[in-house]
Image (tube, rainbow, N blue to C red):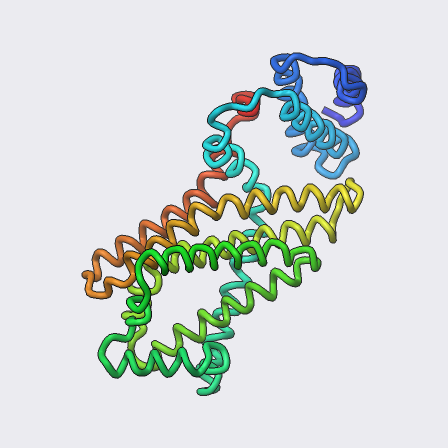
Amino acid sequence: MREAAFVKQNKDKWLKFENALQNNSFISPDELSALYLEVTDHLSYAKTFYPQSNTSQYLNSLASRAHQKIYKNKRESRSRFISFFIDEFPREFYQYRKQFLLAFCIFVLFSAVGAFSAASDGAFVRSIMGDAYVNMTLENIANDDPMAVYKKMGEVDMFLGITINNIRVALYAFVFGIFLGLGTVFMIMQNAVMLGSFQYFFYEKGLLWESVRTIWIHGTIEISVIIVAACAGLVVGKSILFPQTYTRLTSFVKGVKAGLKIVISTIPFFIIAGFLEGFVTRHTEMPDWLAILIITTSFALILFYYVIYPFLLNKEPQHDRKLHSV
């Protein structure tokens, strides 16, 4: 169907819907839900056949305003907390998959830079990790217990300290997005270079497998959700640089709200990572198969929640979706 015919066929319905929203007219949740689904169907059609058109932009704006009105008028469900994690967030996170991929690629790049720098300059690891930490690790290696650092603190103290510190790092990665995303990139760079140089240090000592099987018991989730938090910062940066059809301030507010949701999603995972580091990683005597099982399970959990599950939710047929917020 030609765009002009599509607009003519549905224009009256859109205008009626827009007028109800603008004038704050009362619309029952059921009626608003039905109209919302119809508008999103039209939006999906317009994005497919007229992706860069004014029609597509107009319908996107209309659908967003309707969604906000639904949230404003709905009764809060007692299971709001659960629905956020199992539906609302993963469904929304799908649209930020490019920023997530970018954060991942930046992290991998700077991890490689850290490893290469450590290989090229023997003093690099000390400049990144500090003399005290390197000397302690060398002493642990000499005592035939290279991962002893994970046994020096009590389980509960380590669990709380690590969890709080990781959440703090995630918040910094998010907040630093206000510097056009460059602050977030700097945070990614710091953590990635440290990881790359740290892993090369153990490789050089012939202990790469020992370090991998131990560190990644907690590191799989910890590093993954730091990358997710960096995605939140990049979302904020993008909202400032590319406001699209919104004013820059409106776009920024939307970006901050979206980024905050992403950071909130990481908190349960940071708690899991902190628990693993405090209570599990210290058991370096565990068999390889158990360490591999924990690492593999952790990776599968992250991959499913942040990649596969959002994809599946957003591949539901548009007309079959229920409005979970009503």
